[in-house]
Length: 350
Image (cartoon, rainbow, N blue to C red; front, side):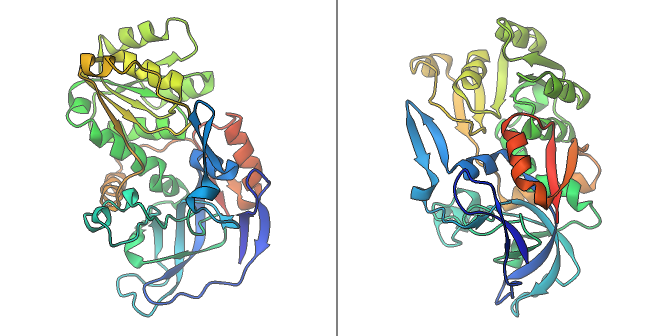
């Protein structure tokens, strides 16, 4: 099989020919139909996260081993199954749930494998979908697409379930108040469409890119504010019609976190999703003084992905802009993503 592998952090991906995989036990082999390119792939490519104050979280020290085939937003057709697989069959087209845990710890036992301390995530800790074939550890991580377009469906495995889980953390706020979404990239546009499908009151979106702001308005945003404007905070408050009860930061920089926190009403809630990098910018006394809740949200559970696909199958989730590219354009696509040249999502096919 042909894979595009990360062989050295920061270096162009290398086209590699590998033996076709043979499944055993509960494993399933898929022929990749589509794989999304996620902003998290940039961190993998770089091999680090920025923790602020000159500190870096180095992925090599966190058990990420090279060479690695990235790609955690994958849909494909089953071409082989292990002897213990009883619930899937050759020929089915499925979406892969990539946030796989150890299967034994407390969070895994309660269905929150995405929070496992010993993860086996597809495209991060084991080879992913930047390839023409993919091995999935267990058939339970495969969700049949039932006729859905694999290219349109692939991003639901990360940007979809991540934003769905973040919106759920706001609880009844989304039913009662417009919310603030910071970032109108692939995550932001996906969040807007899912919010609409969940019956939410809508969102005001903030982004530095005019093109992405235009895409957000087209996707149904109540307003789109330029994050670089001197009066961005005032524009947000005016668009929301008052203080903010719920905010989701899909960027995760000191500037965006500060904007989201400062917008909160007393008793408001902020959900942190983005991994751009940096240190928390707010004064600690203001957290209790505002009685503010700040909650991190990392991807989503298998159950949440199943719930989201149910919404998608009902036609309740409008599509986001998707550019289709060949797998051979993986390195170019990562660079375009880094430079902010992509609106929506790029999905690659072999």
